Length: 180
Image: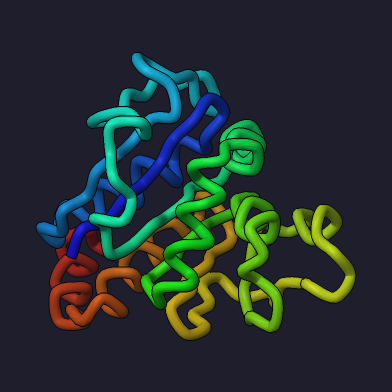
């Protein structure tokens, strides 16, 4: 299972790091792809670096695309043509899509939230159309879409990704190791 996690200036660092770290504890193949070369400054000033850049990966070679939140990162995902196309392609191919926090707005921009049950950070619903609104749950799975609310739900989100990708026993093992 190959997982692609893009990051950009303003990405929510806790979400990005917790997701990547937890998935790697499950020995999943995770690639962090920065939208820009070098170090990015995340939403709270923490510096992060990708394993590679978005331009150097082929999104079609991945099984799962996960967007961490943070308003700055989400804004970058909304306007980035490659990210938007990848979201559409993953959805059309029936591949797993995941997002947390404000990144639901980027998924909406790509047109994949219509008729889907999802969640996001409270307040983000004001940035979505009236007919596309979240439910108030920490983690929601609808088909091949996994969504979550924010930094405090990032562990539960990542563990659910592990379980939904066919490894529920491994998710339990990782949970125990994290003392959750």
